[in-house]
Length: 121
Image (tube, rainbow, N blue to C red; front, side):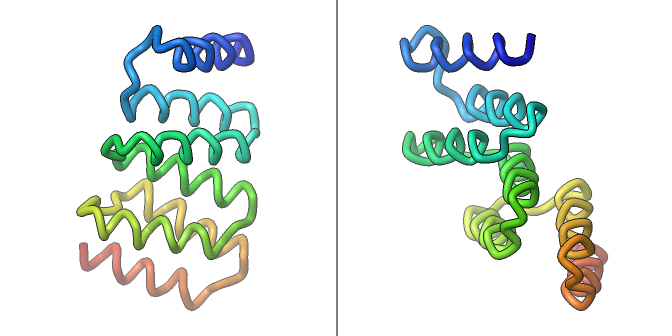
C-alpha cells in the first residue's frame, strides 16, 4: 500500500494535480523513509529545495533521518547549520536524532556538545 501511495503522490505532483507545498514534499519524503529508501527521500528534498518553498522543522527532521540512514554524518551537521541559518530552531526530536547519530558514529564528544546545546535552547 505504501508503495502505491508514493507512486500516486509522485504522479500527482508531476501532473500538478496536488498543491506543491513543503508539506506535500515532506509527506513523500516520510513515505520513502518508511520504505527504507533514504536516497529517494533525499531526492525529494532536492526537488523541494529547487521550488523555493519554505522548509519546515518537520522537513528538516525527516532530512536528518535520511542522511543518518545513509550514514552521511557530515551532511547531518550541514542540515543543522542550514536550519539555523533559516531561523528554524531544532526541537527535542531533532536533538534526539542528532545525539543518536553521534552515538552510531562513535562521536561521543559531539554528542555531549549537542546535549549542552539542547539544555541551552
